[in-house]
Image (cartoon, rainbow, N blue to C red):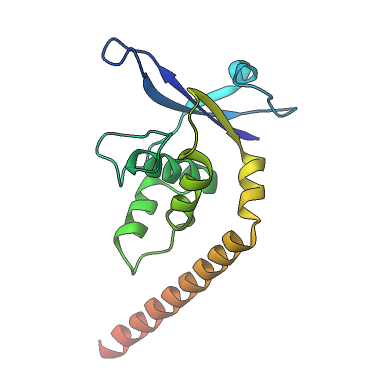
Length: 164
């Protein structure tokens, strides 16, 4: 099971608040009950998808830093690359991104209210959140849009082939 764990690293440049860091832990066995349980797990840095924030990821308010953190967590969760997500956000003709479609809701539900210096979000919690009727409807609509885009591209290819 994946666990997304955030904590602040105190630096000389930022000794009072600390720099935000989020790790992705692949946990085998029982779900962790605290951040301390994650010490023995395989861990990697969360790949950040930069779209909203010029200053990087953050949590604890409803701004651009938490939006990029939400985008990054969901991109990792869904297996979408930063490039796929950014292209989807910038073009109506590209394949849809689940992370792009849901990140503002995720930010509001999980990250905007998070005031602690250390926190974790388990994949099973994200699974349950995605199972809500509004999120399921959003993902269904996204799949329909992807199918429509694929059909438009197909028709475009056919038209180009016929004109050659």
